[in-house]
Image 1 (cartoon, rainbow, N blue to C red):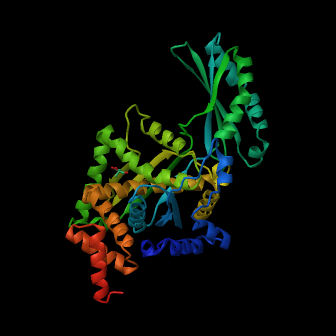
Image 2 (cartoon, protein in one colour):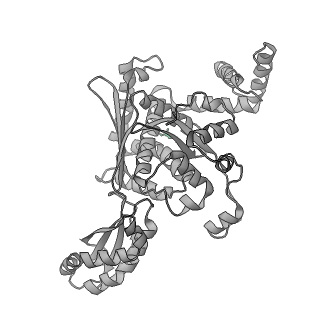
Image 3 (tube, rainbow, N blue to C red):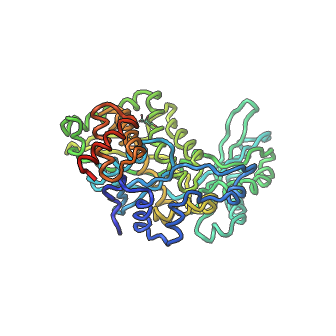
Length: 429
Ligand code: MEV
């Protein structure tokens, strides 16, 4: 297994980076060309994906390095417009790598489909009639998708609740379905639509909404990892102080929902970017994450940070992960397919584990930056790099120009050009 620790990766050109990634993931010539392509999605393909298409919209596709999850190296494809997200993620993954990498664990890929039943004559008895018919209903659900059942997935359970509402007592039916390697909304929606007439027959009520739930709390993904305290001796802090800063930053999110929202937004910076790169429905994942964060009735951070007996930093995360590697845009979008190949994940469960590790690492990156240097300095460095490259700096010149501009507090294209010219005169080429 090749290493994901690609030193100096950020200093390469996009084409060179793509070559390294192709090598890592064993891509074919064709796939490597697609990876580096400026227009991987054709207008014709786009026109088949959604309605009223007029063009194709581009975003950067980047790779985060350094990930070890369950003792396997990963390169992480990300699509995101925000600077510092990819660099921050790679940096945080390196910190956790020093502690042995991430450990991760995901539930079976069980999704929930809901049927809303109104105007039920005797709701309490109707609920029991439905439960008594569970076997029949599960069989009917499975009949909708013989391929899924052949793959080992299918309907697993039926749950029924009564709920008071402004339009009277309603029955809420949950169909639990193992969707294997798909995100699963399609399979679940088909099944609940097929079940609805039978639910009406058994309850005497009227089925209205029949739709997947995005609070996919039977499909949780979890990751945890250790950062050796020495790795946090940054910015003149002792290792203990470095760990303490992260604990204090996390405590803010525990204490206050206004902070928790931003804390979780940072987690989703990474998760969404991988969701987008792999053609997954990032809105579904977002909805699940935030609903789960509020499950106690109070909005909470999705991560926890603690200190272990040796004083090292230990992080963990748990969130719903309705993401797949099969079906929908994960197959229809050429680069999404490629992103899944680069990840090398074989199942949606393994993919969910990667997503959890990414969320945890992105949170660590944000907390480290916020609690140690403030977020703008990192942004400035990235900005300075862009300015240096735009002025024509290549290879080692980039860092030299960046360092000098930052030291002078003058991150401008005219200054970059002057510094570059001076460097070249001094014979730095
Ligand atoms: C910015 O996109 C994300 C952060 O605000 C997250 C956080 O504050 O934890 C930096």
